[in-house]
Image 1 (cartoon, one colour):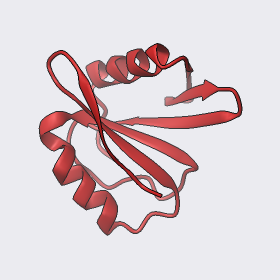
Image 2 (tube, rainbow, N blue to C red):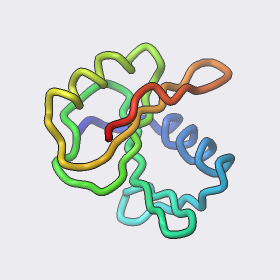
Image 3 (cartoon, rainbow, N blue to C red):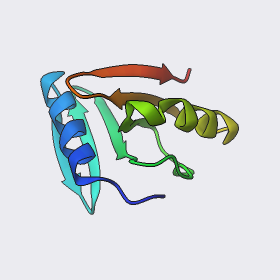
Image 4 (cartoon, one colour):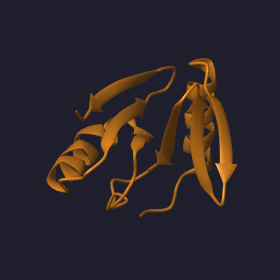
Length: 99
């Protein structure tokens, strides 16, 4: 997996805190906790190979990389649920989610 941008890590933490999640960093992995749900947060500045395993995972990237990352994730045929958040200048958009 590619190197995560520190600012994307902060963006991911801020977004999920605003959504009512508690964000923790364990062994270099960001996790958002709320009630029974745990979402693994994956800041990804450049579209790269996704992790092979996971439960619920949210990729956080820059908005201009969303479509490339989406194609990469769909082509990987992953066995976990995932979503992509595209971060822009002043906002973010949930661009895709798997079912």
